[in-house]
Image (cartoon, rainbow, N blue to C red; front, side):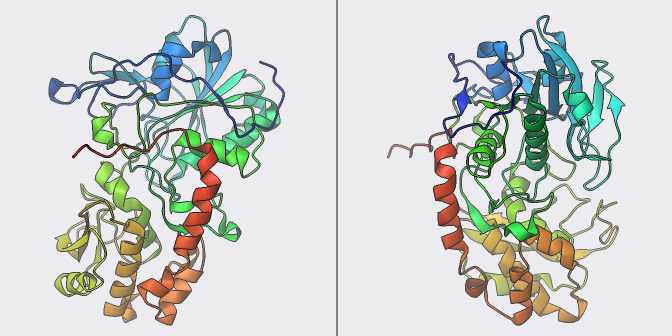
Length: 437
C-alpha cells in the first residue's frame, strides 16, 4: 500500500469478516504477556469476534510483511475458542510474517494502572521487548521519527462510548499524525459496551479539549471504528483508514452476551454498570462531590459528607425521570485518586438504571440541581474542568441561574437529531432486532 496520505471517503475500506468463529468470556485484568482465564472456567456462549480476532483470522494481509506499530493497553486482547485471551501485542509479536516494532500507551498506561491525569513515561514492554512510547506524557501523539519507522499503525483499545473518555481522542491524534506521515491507520474495532444510544448535549467546538476534541454527544453511541470513520468523513481528518469490524455484534447487544472478555479499561471503571452511568456521573468530577473513586463501584454513586441522602433521594424522585431510580447511600472512599473525602463517610445517591429509557445525562443534571440546592454554601464549581466536561459553559451558568431540568436540556434533542443524521453514514453495525413475543 503506498505510504501517501489521502482522505478516506465515506465508503470506508473495510475487511468484512469471512468466517464466524468463537469468542470467549474471560476474567481478571491482564497486561501484555498474560493470558486471561475464563470466568470460573465456564466460557460464555461465543457470539462475537473482536476486530483483533478478525484481523488474525481473515485480514492478516494488513500486517503481513510490514513494520507494525500498535496503540493498545491491557484491554487489547485476542480471544480464543478455549475461553482464554492473550494480549494483542503478544500475538502480533509472535507472528512470523509481521514485525511489531513499536507500542504506544494511552492515558492510564499500557497496563491501565495509572490514575486519571497522571503522566506516563516511555518504557520497554517486558513480554515482547518492544519499546513502549507514552501518548500521555510529554506528547499525546506518535512522533514523526517513530512513525517514519512504521509501515502501518494499529489501534486496539476497549472504549466505553462516552465523550469524556480519552482513549478515542488518543486515537484521533494518532490518526492525524499518521496521516501527516503517510502511514496507514487500522482500527481493530470493539463493541460499544453501552450500546448505540445517543444522549446528552453535543460539544461546543469552542470547548474542544482532550476530554472531547470533536462535536459529539456525551453518550455518542459509536464504536472506535465508527468514530474514526466519522472523524474522516465528517470532520476532515486526513488519513488512509481501514476499520477491521467486529463480527456478529448488534448495536444494543449487552456486552455480557458477546462472549468477549471484559477487563476494566481504567482503574475506576470496574464494570459495564459504571460505564453506563459514566456519561452523567463524570460531570461531578468538576464539582465538590465525590464520584466514589476509592470504592468498588466508582461512577455509580455520588455524594459529599454534608449532604442529606434521604432528602436528596426524595427530591430526585419528584423529577420522575423515565426508568431512573435514586437510592440513598453512605460510602467511605479509601485512598481515592481524586483526593475527595478519603476515609470519611460520604452521603449521597446511587444511580439505578431501571429500564431502556434510562438517561444518565439528564439524571446527572437533576442531581447537580438538587445537590447544589441542598447545600449552596458548600458548593464550589471547578469551573474550567466542569465546562470542559460539559462541553459548554451554558449548563453551569444555567444551574447558577436557577433554571430547571427541562430548561437546561431543552435544546439537547435538536442537537442529538442533528448528530444522528451526521453519524448515520458511518455506522457499521445493525440495530439489535426485537425479541420475538
